[in-house]
Length: 323
Image 1: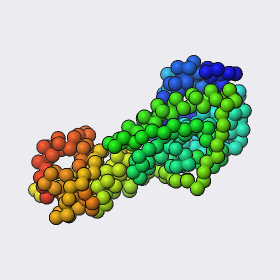
Image 2: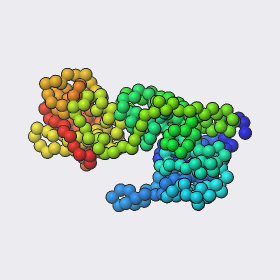
Image 3: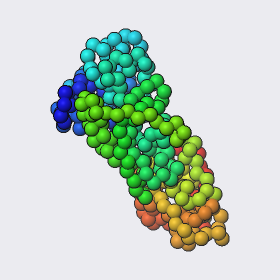
Image 4: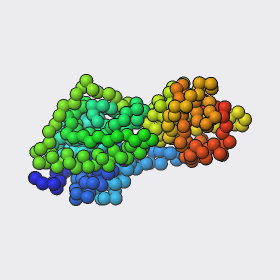
């Protein structure tokens, strides 16, 4: 099996939208997974209607067999997966830990596309934490799956600069497309016998744990740069929350979507106060808000919020519980 076509028979494991460009790229190569394994549909929203994952929707639209086990590592599930006689498993944002028995069900094992430059940002939220921590560069990694989380041998990586105003959802979508190209290249190398697995440097490991709403409780005494990174890293979920408190009128909760740090000195006003330039004072520098979402309203520009709420200097933004 040599050349640039992909002849490997694949079972795809995934739930999140990160994998959609990879499935589309495989489709452009004429590769249709023998089966797509995704998590069971879950109730969501006020009506608690069952929500279909983006990956299941892709499978339905492309007439691909679907498995939705509660536990993918159960013996009966593995037996069912083996019946597809696939060469390799491809896993992207699946949501369940994978056992050695399942890995061994494939002659070439299971490979995973992860949205960071491993060994940095192992875990559930690598895109968010790269922005929150002020990284200037991130990327994608394709690795061999083993029983430890994000610890397998690296088969390939692609790096990209994080753009100054980029939010987590924007970076996620860019990495999904960068990752789709890397996945194709890696599959071709695997089938041609030219892939070179490289051990991760454990001394460089950093973590990217699950996000929580508490992360979005803003502390205006932090620096403007740190707050800006937090805002972009937590958009659209869980969001960075604050309470807008005008000098006159009713306070309103808001969620910030995009902001940048400016070096204006605002030492004469408390952190969280709107300055004369209509920025927000912080522990170091000022925060220039670009976009925000008031409670009960749509995402809007800061200027529209200023105009609509008649925001003035010495209005305040305070700490607020997440919505």
